[in-house]
Image (cartoon, rainbow, N blue to C red):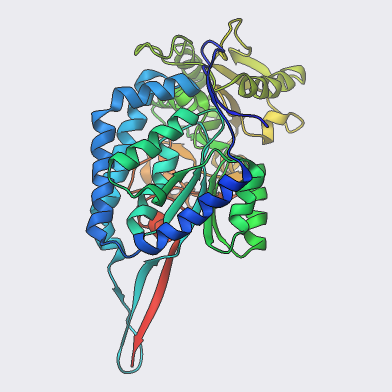
Length: 456
């Protein structure tokens, strides 16, 4: 069975590896998590939130150390790795601050005599299945609200970031969390399926591909478990004819190439009105060409390696398929000749429906530019996708942008900005981009029992 392994994507060096747990260990983890829930749900809210405050402090104190692990395991540039750690600290602090408000009884305006309210309570042990592209952030947005609420967590991380996974578990223990409230599990897919099926597990959250989401949703549905699925995206970036083209081109490059393009909410389809297409593309290509690959440990590097050779190959297959069928290369368009997983910042145009890049998610530093005749055509193309995660609209007319926002089939719309994350903004999509929400109050409520209490 394949091990969990740290393979430096900048060099290809296999740095460390860890065995998958045995089936007996997997069952013991379920036992431990379920038993821990009995005590944790009764723990005073102030004690639970104090753990989160300490987690925020530890992330800030050890930012350099934690960021270095991200760079080692998935190639995140130093600057962006430090940014992820800072965001994670804010998430833990946010839920520590907001938990009293989010758990407060909610009075209901009812007919008849007496009163009624809704109480927010935990539901039990949960399973989290997290990806490699934001190893700390993805865990924090699931773990923080649920630990504050009183649930317990079994966390299966991606196979290529085991040291990130261990670092999170260690920090929780140092922050004072009882050992079995959060358990890292180097588990197999089959073991996770068995956990989800166990009657003591009450829910599962997955961030990953639609294929993985479909598999997890099937198991969870069969066993009547609550699930949250945060899946892929092919986010549109709409450039209207009154946009500030210099600012828009800079935002487009960052929106496509941040985290080496390996984000579900990265801008991937650039839909530009005909009136400004040529001028925008010229500026966009120039901005993209400033993203040169380099050593991710160097604070000046803007584009590091992709997370693995497998990810590199998957992206290149999509790009080469488009090129072979007539797509135009505006920038990049090829793997780099190096021992690491480096791919040139790439832009394509003239992509048509017979090309894989038209419908499939480009998960790496490659984007597609489309020319459309007018605003209506831009909306139609933006919605012509199996995904519906995030989207961006660039214009100097806010009212115009808000009108378009109501017509986009997406869970999130950003006006004059690419998609960003903050603790107080809900995250999630529609269509094949998933089910449920994370962050803000919405994420806090996903795995809660909204219990009605009626007093006649």
